[in-house]
Structures are given as structure tokens and as C-alpha cells.
Image (cartoon, rainbow, N blue to C red; front, side, top):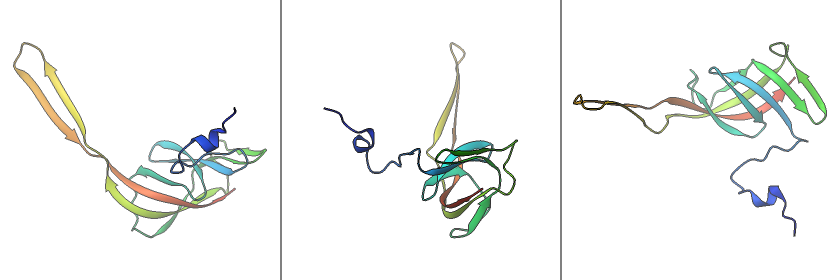
Length: 123
């Protein structure tokens, strides 16, 4: 009995299908593959909640078999997004320990993020 991979995945997770139009954008020093309607967390951006913004650093756009790759960015390409929320990630604990020296240092870090909803892709 064959089970479809798409049917086996939970509904919460968005599945990237080859027929969907997607783009690879760069923001906050990282690259993300995005699809219209997707929600993702990126490094903190200076924008109000509910504001729409453009991500101009588009590295690649694919629409089915039609693929455009920039060098390094696609001219005239942009991804539009809406800011849903701002927040802080879970705490990451940093522990520095030196054995037999009575030395242990603990430190925590919480990274700020901005949650975006992708509204459109133009190439």
C-alpha cells in the first residue's frame, strides 16, 4: 500500500510543491525559501506590527519549470510581506566550565525575532 508523502505530513506544516511559485530571499544574514501565504521568523526588523514591507534581496525565483537566478540578486525582484508580531525566542543557556578549578560561568541569551507573513512574490 502506497501512502502519499503529502497526506502523511501534519496539516500545520506547509509542503513545498514543485508547481508552487517560490523564492529564495536574504534577510538578517540568512537565506530563506518562501512561498506566498507562508509565515516565518526572521531576525528582528524595524517595522511596526501590521506594516507591510518589501524584501528586495531576492536570490532566486522559481515558477514551475521557469527558474530565474540572480547574480547575486534578481533585478526588479522583490518579496512583499506583512509584519505579524515581534518577540523573543526561547532561552539558550551558555555554560563555561573548567574542571578542578572551582570555575563555572552561566549565561543566558534570548534572540529577538520578527514574524512575517509572505503576501506576494514578484520577479
